[in-house]
Image 1 (tube, rainbow, N blue to C red):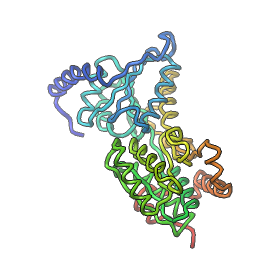
Image 2 (image 1 turned 180 degrees about the vertical axis):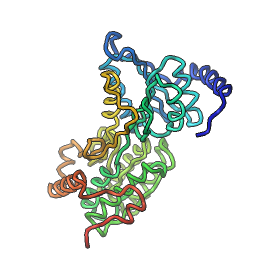
Image 3 (image 1 turned 135 degrees about the horizontal axis):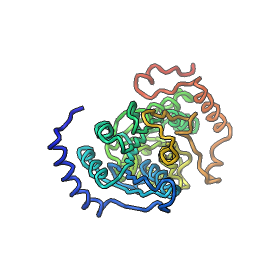
Image 4 (image 1 turned 45 degrees about the vertical axis):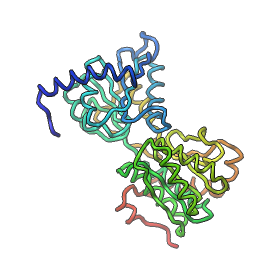
Amino acid sequence: MKRINSVKRALAALLAGCLCLTAFAGCGDKKEGGDAGKKGSDIKAAIIISGSFGTQSFQDVALAGCQKAADEFGFELTKVENVNSSDASSTIQSLIGQGVNMIISPNDFFNDSIEELAPENPDVRFISGDAAVPDLENVASSYYREQESAFLLGALAGMLTESNKVAFIGHTSNVVMDRFDYGYQAGAKYVNPNVSVISMYTGSVSDVNKGKEMADLLYSQGVDYIAPAAAACNTGVFQSSKEHGGNCWTFGAADGQFHLMPDRILASQVKRIDNVCYQFLKDAVEGNWKGGQPQEMGLKEGGVDLLYTTNEELAATIPQDVKDRVEELRQKVVSGEIKVPGTKDEFTAFSFPSK
């Protein structure tokens, strides 16, 4: 990893400190987690993200887990939003200079900065919530087999579709989106060899209109089930589903998102990064820190899951034999009998049942 010299680093940190004071006034939200007498009161934490909170993305799910820990264990939690990857190192340095000793990054956007700064700040702990960071004792990290929950969702879509056309909408093409995408495709084709799966990408995590435009196009082409995993763009998909009505159904992601469109979202693939962040913080408070040991999370570990709608009327439209088949597939994935593909090469080599 490229290193800048110490003079440039000091100047960058000083400049970031000045900027950060202004930035915090506009986008940072500081909240006392509770009683100063609680066990976690020596922790001063900050969760740092590239986008914004309140977009119904998994970053909000991560925040919920962090806030739960802050409230329960009594430590301060600061929210820092809209940080570019190019500014991540200087922003983190500024936070450390202000006494923050626990940096939480819900995804892999700032991993280069974490891997650079963690060895230089051994008294500061880092949580990388969605990427493996091995061999650094002050970095706790997790990564997910998103393809497993996507596989179940794809199987559900493959059995429910009447048009034999289903779709996936992601935000940007990357290794995480590949796991969602190819897992979903594999699940649909595993149960329905005649199904066509269309994959599209918005190129944005925040363009709601783009999500809606893509969903409008897909529904007009006969797609009857869309699985979005595109952060705030998902809400555009939900709007499209509501406007088209009928058999133009949608699934959810993040925390389930059922509350956003309770009469159109039949099921959701969820990533329980809230539980993971909470557990890492709890471990820190209780002296059980697991730095340097990336935690792999799939269906078996409870890191990902498929949830059905709690809308009883809507849930009743999913036949019991379909749910039973999904549960059968879940058990095969958990046992290792089915190894779900998460890349193009794995998908190409995947063994589907004989037609």
